[in-house]
Length: 359
Image 1: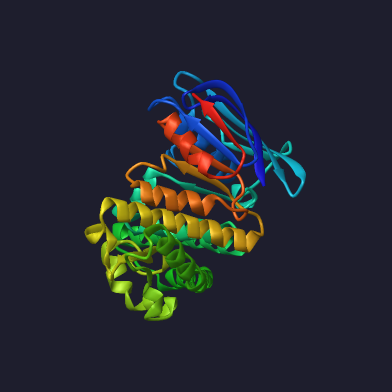
Image 2 (image 1 turned 120 degrees about the horizontal axis):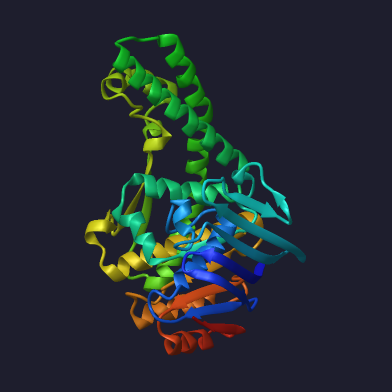
């Protein structure tokens, strides 16, 4: 799986640009604010139909313009695949594969396996549980369509149940039968999601620990701990036992939408006890484990995007990461960096073909 050519029209700061790529390593280099990260985000957009950095779709349209187009020409399993993502103000986003538009964007997820490592990943440590849940969901969804379908249905029912709880409070009324219908649906879609998250982490955590040990030379021990209400009880029972609370606060207080993934270093929260270098190593190990897992599931090495990867890492850790990507296990890699010379010195250590793209 690799991207041969990327064409951008009115995407973020690009008016009209086309890039041709090496099948192994491609480096976007240039000053801050020139568009290196935007170029990587365009590639991410082709895989997921959305930006990694800006969830408001219209804000990815170049200032003063009415639309954007991101056009990627890939090769997958020795077949040419053309993916186009486009958006016009006031209209719905369109994703096309080989000229045919998807009816549901979820059908496209997983077709272009891709992993991004970026300074924005810091949110996984610093922000709330929703960010970590999205990470788990995005990894599983790339190889499990049924999981994604259950998750979408669960979230739809959840918003309906929350709206009903607000309606009860606003109108001083209550209907147990209607609520029971939503409770049953939440259980139907939520229980399989929970079970798949448990199974995923049983496979994923050992891969993650191994990746971290390589980056850190085994100086610290790390762990991921899955926290869920459903370890305590069946979802239907949880919803019933928390009914009075839910009616009082007017939203659903228990369920898979409250799950979290705790990040530990030497048995302490990495958010409080990890140095900047340790936190960055933790996140890189997490994303490289994501790479390994997706490759294992799909049989295809995902495209790997390394955004500002050398920031806040000492030379030893950079060398460890570079040695890791210097094998046939990895496919196509895209790197962004402000220092052209540093980047070239680093990629020369990887015994693969490469291309430097100066912006």
